[in-house]
View (tube, helix red, strand yellow):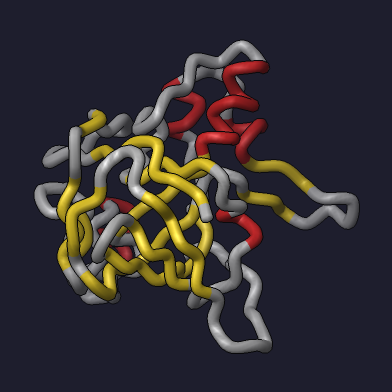
Length: 179
């Protein structure tokens, strides 16, 4: 079991999302008051392609261990800085299979839909950062490390310090792909 380290939301299209004392997750929509909440896609690049597509990116989660690693490299990355809504600690988010349910706090449940596909805006935040959150494995495959995306199954309030409980889907497990 892990913990929620921080929660963040922004009502406007900003790269960094301010930290909050709490956020409210709404089933089928996402983070109440966040610009990316909705049944259909809200990320501007996806809206341009097809605004009728389902929103598989309602809640963005990132592991605080990535922040630790980036800060050790000389970057100044704090919770919410890279646009995540929920910053966790103690859960290997990138190793979870598609369909994993994360129980956040007392009531909220999100279902993992896939990996965040980092964009060049990350280098606008901090020059050279993109190459540390997207790389290649030994076989030349792309490795994305900028968190995971999810949809809200059960709403509820989420606060820093809340527990994160992982519920894996039935096997066989499907590795995460970008959404």
